[in-house]
Length: 481
Ligand SMILES: Cc1cc2nc3c(=O)[nH]c(=O)nc-3n(C[C@H](O)[C@H](O)[C@H](O)COP(=O)(O)OP(=O)(O)OC[C@H]3O[C@@H](n4cnc5c(N)ncnc54)[C@H](O)[C@@H]3O)c2cc1C
Image (cartoon, rainbow, N blue to C red; front, top):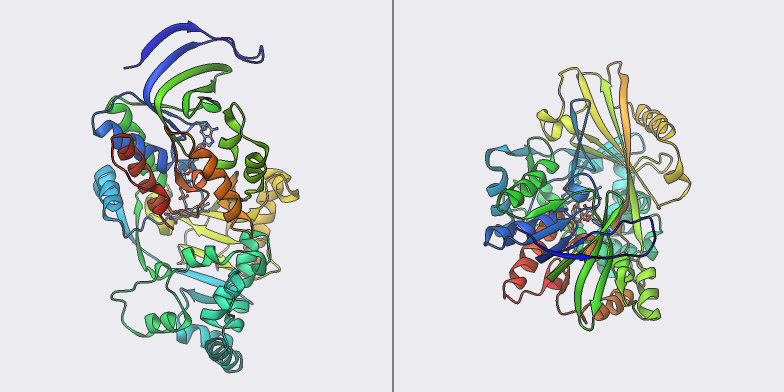
């Protein structure tokens, strides 16, 4: 499938051996949902000379599933939901009957009580008591009469729609755990994308009226989920790409993109301690955009590098544990709002799919923490993290019966969330202007676009990028805008 050019290269340090240069039509950098969807679309439309390079040993990106001692662990919990027919069609085409429909139950833990999430009227007011409920209603009315004129920050955006009191009760602590910055420093763009079309009035309407046509994104009470977790979807996609004649190379890190004028000509890939040079006509990248900018040679101007450096990501750690215990709790996941507990969210994988756990008397959990790459928490040993996770989990008294810890592991995800701070729009403008100078390079996906994409947005960006290569003119930046 691949044309080999018998030309030997000597690259950089002596650590690397030389390797034959190889040629493809399209090279895709990263085999997460975005890259794989692009690759699949291309090979399905008969473009066989497609190479995907993935630095990890497994396809799927953040949406991969890890198998450990017979059980399956999602990194986070990945609901498959979309209002994009071409994405749902693709997901069904890939997995068919292994794509299960699951019921959603998620709650908020706050001040030793559980509240339904999405919030329901009776439950929230009953849980908070009459006095606090009255304060919430009056604060909501105040926000309607005297809203913040300026809606620049997350705090202003949410307070305008829910009132300040409800913002402080149900949004502030959790959001600050996730982002690690105060809500008045977080741009309103995140809320606008994430809590689309939802207000206290909508939430009340949805909790009182029968669940029919619920429009707001956060209020979906059913979702699709692959039998063995999200990784099953993307591993199957990778398998199909290879079956159709494309190549998916795992354990292959992109190190450099070499440009000549307005075109990227080749990439240097490090794999197995060797460096290989690959040429192509088109390049599609899902690599974090701040890293991509610095991989292109000749190097970008100083102001572009500075803008790229200004783009920050929040990291995520999943402490995955197996407990001996058959009756756990009914939720798919629980948000831990209580500020005295560092733990942010708990996943109960059996409730995502019963096939995730191999024995009836086991419960598997994902205990989720948010932090910055290389901060104190990030550097804690795996054993310390598992110990802390179990201690914090025990404090919540979620499982009534006696349970026992069997085993566990920790996954650190360095660039899980693009941070929408006050300078990201300005920085992205500079970075995009620079990347637009390359006529044959498209940047897609969550980190490639520096956008809070769900899987469906990333998948669509892959499909559109592939079709652009084939002559269509889709504006990828319209996705999830
Ligand atoms: C905790 C959490 C929960 C989530 N829950 C949901 C959910 O319920 N529903 C939903 O739809 N979405 C959810 N998401 C979002 C979802 O994970 C992403 O939208 C999706 O994985 C993005 O796909 P992607 O291909 O754009 O990027 P990624 O998944 O980040 O894939 C990019 C790939 O590029 C590879 N790569 C990076 N650098 C290099 C390099 N130098 N060389 C080679 N390869 C490289 C990476 O290893 C990775 O495999 C969640 C995300 C998080 C963090």
